[in-house]
Image 1 (tube, rainbow, N blue to C red):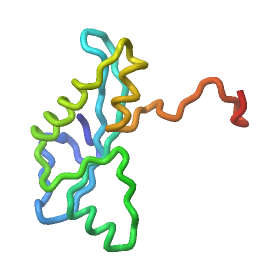
Image 2 (image 1 turned 120 degrees about the horizontal axis):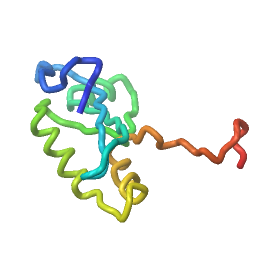
Image 3 (image 1 turned 180 degrees about the vertical axis):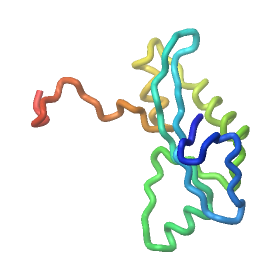
Image 4 (image 1 turned 60 degrees about the vertical axis):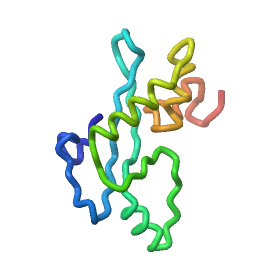
Length: 119
């Protein structure tokens, strides 16, 4: 897990009574194989959600983790447990399950489309 905007994510210590929004990059691959793909999830606290909705902003919840307090170990364990449940015959089976949690780097990629969006 990485959050480049804050340096080492393990040392990120937001004030528990103030809003925070953290874009977290996950590097996930198949066990026992080299390489991984990137997935991005937004981690916010309930204060951030309240702040945004108080402005009249509707927040769409896909690829968000909402928490009261930021705790790296707890977040890591929660994400790891989710990933462990994402199984399949191959990577193509696993990715759609992982993508329910975080945005896959190739989520909207389609190599068969031309510049005009036609096959």
